[in-house]
Image (cartoon, rainbow, N blue to C red; front, side, top):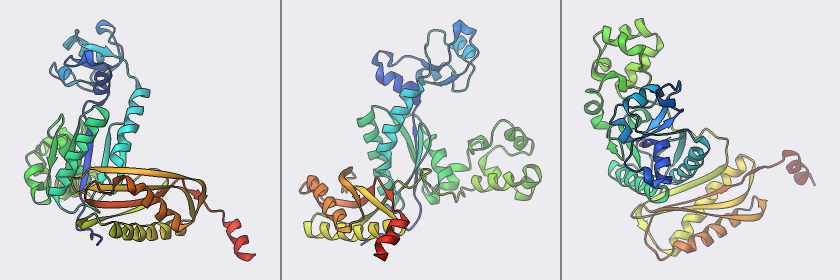
Length: 362
């Protein structure tokens, strides 16, 4: 019943012009205007930089990291706003919570970027494309913002792909399309190749990713040391880094994607019983008790929901997980067929080893 992992499928989600988009969302009168978020331009004498800007401002040549004085000269009539990081972090936290429910593994890398590994529950790019479209739709519906998504076999290609068709873009790079996608690009598209590395590569006659990928790696090592190997691998679309949650363990969960969508109540109860067994075994190995039971539900059309139920006290009781999962599931019964079901426990507490020993002894 549970899918075997065939290959990694990674999504990179990049919010479009995040700071300025949040400002425009909250101040609709700014829609369609060039908006620059950064330091005070002081009528062209400001010394800070533009943190980000709307796409209307980019039409004037303004970009993130540009001196605010230069931005002002390019477009003095733009709307200049100071950075409101508290607001952006609050909106970011809400968006990341939405993104998490679609991921097998999740990694936030900045206030407006995240990687999702979906290869455990989805093994084909047609389904991955549908899921990416659903994510874009949900981000727009729930948060009033657009994002661009790259879908690819690994992190570096997914990141490059998410920037390929901005704003509100979706770019799919299947394993067989890697060379056709990467090789025509300028080498500056490879992460890590910046203002210092790029001129040296150009001196070596390397301007495209394809030229870098086919260059003798020993020549690159001679000029760049170990980074020469890294550049060569990335240019060939090789990236073995996994999507990893950077936070401490806050939950234990598992899920199952079905070969055929299910709706039978008996089958659903069986699934939750089996998933609970896995969660409980993992939780006990890690020496945790829990207070909250969560479920994850994905319908056949990729609508995805999570629900949670918090207990009065922490416990290690396995049957309580199954019981509460089925109670939470009642909301969704009779509303369609299910592609995926998951169960987990959160609000974890570490079991005190001394208490365990004493209870076992007596």
